[in-house]
Image (cartoon, rainbow, N blue to C red; front, top):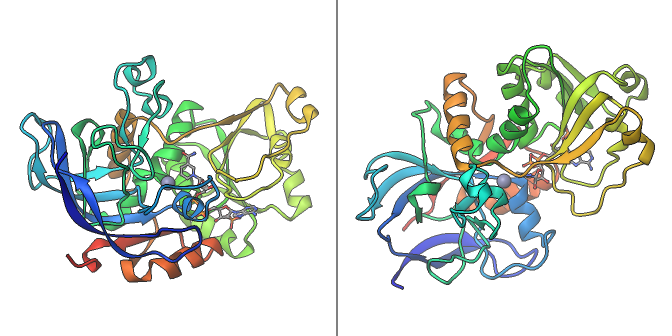
Length: 351
Ligand code: NAP
Ligand code: ZN
């Protein structure tokens, strides 16, 4: 298959800094959309990947899966997009398209395995997928979203992963009026979850390890914010919450949070700590509680989420950086030193 050379930032070994390199993208096929990437968010999953937390990766690896851009070309059979349209691409760029999950709009659970926007096998080209720390992206139109005209387009890029990852469980576990929702961790995912859960009408309590974020949590819209190290404060929430979204990226004690659930309540893990988490039997048996997980969201639901955020004026609190500062950004993300999402202005990567 013909390919096109594209500038990107990536790395060839675990724990090595990212640097400029050239990748080969497939040329636009009949059902493909080509997008110039304007902005790309930096997710903690990008950091896990380049640290080797999820195992070895194919090299070079080009991270980035929160892409917003403008369509530059479309294949002959594309009907839904045209050159010049604002568009977006998230974590998923292909799936089988015919299994029961794909038919139900649950592409992340595709029977044949989903193709992620980076570090996956590209079934079309036979090569690997390279993420959004690059000038352009090419994929099937089915996996391209219509980007509403957000005033701050850069700040909307994180919705493509952080946004859908918390929107999907908020919808599934029916956040809304009368529901007491807990958010664990105020990072990229957590701060958007606060904004969305409030917009859905839920009562929102945030649990954080960072004393400095308590006031900020209220500015973001939380009704209550609790320092998780304060046992006395924590005890007040025993058996009070309907469900909790756990966005924590490192090993932590989930039993503490199971005990904050009402009967039939659920802790939904979206964070991806590399180590296994332990659960005490009584913390789920008593109260018929559940410990669940959730993986991003389907394509139709991602479009619904973008439209919901546009309607409710929800974007990420973002720090815009140049691609040349990406290694420093990863170091700061590892230390929790970002309020609350880095977004790369891809114009800083010259052709
Ligand atoms: P992030 O911006 O780094 O936020 C993570 C937050 O977790 C931190 O801000 C911190 O919040 C808290 N935290 C970190 N270390 C902790 C520790 N040792 N103990 C307790 N709390 C800790 O990361 P993110 O981009 O939001 O991503 C969060 C996690 O979700 C990552 O593991 C990522 O890979 C995963 N993820 C999963 C999906 C999915 O589909 N399931 C999608 C995207 C991301 P406080 O300072 O408030 O305590
Ligand atoms: Zn992500």
